[in-house]
Image 1 (cartoon, rainbow, N blue to C red):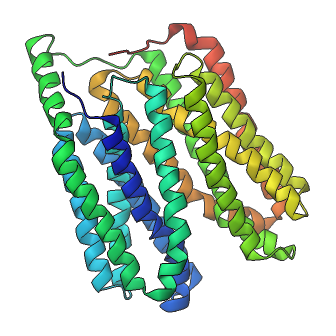
Image 2 (spheres, one colour; image 1 turned 90 degrees about the vertical axis):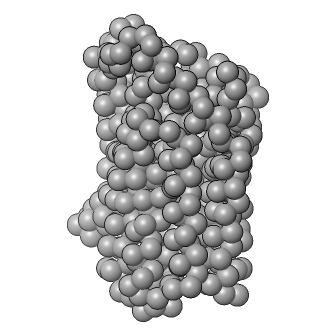
Length: 396
């Protein structure tokens, strides 16, 4: 059976990541500094964008299991392209906010479909596929964020036009190379119709473990967002220049690329996937421990290094684990839920962090984050120890 080549899936993921990295880093600056929108309103716009991504992820996952993913992805990429073209022509207020909401939907939609399509690539182990997808997405972030500042100062119209061009290339790539995805979907559904018409049900213990992991994603991403939303203010309050904060994310991106290369070199086996998840969550918790004591830039570099070791090992392993625990006709739905719960955490993070800081202090926030991620780790490890022998692993 012909299947989509992994290199085309990775290329599409890379193009999408670069294109979206032209949008999200400048949203707050553009709305507040160029359009004069209040920071409170900007916060609402970003929240709606994240919620739109949650909706896009969930609906796309459900649709993947019922419809032809080739046409679903074409529609998502095409909608993103048209939205970016309109954004290049009309980027005033409130049009920018409306179009950003649409981009939130398409972002969640496209990411979920790319991950769900990755579950159908049988030539490689699932862990390797998701590690490579995570690598491609972060390589796109490195490239996009490295360019966006320079282009923004030239012309914001040019910035959106380049993003639209990237999605035009993505659309062409999907149109010409992703057809095996559609053919495979048709063959799978015909085979199901010819055999047992009843779809496979998700086993009870698999469902319990998946729910636990989705709750963990919500909490971990809520805490992770403190790095994105509140740490810059904390560092500047300590007298550390904002440029130094930006360099932390350059370090983050570079380390992620290096760690992914190392992981893919060491092993293509998913046998120890759960230990990769536990190690990653442990590192995320330890990064907040370091932040409790961080008063100089060197400590923040150490904390970011520890955080990156955590996210680069845990975040790509979780969708691979979800893939192993879901039957063929439910893979899209649950990959969608992975992205939806992560997006929900990203939406809640800034609000949660701001509330804790206003009520107490940054140090209290870091202690709460350490405790929350630590409890998640303990709960997941205990659950896994109790039920892992009762789980059903689906290998196709």
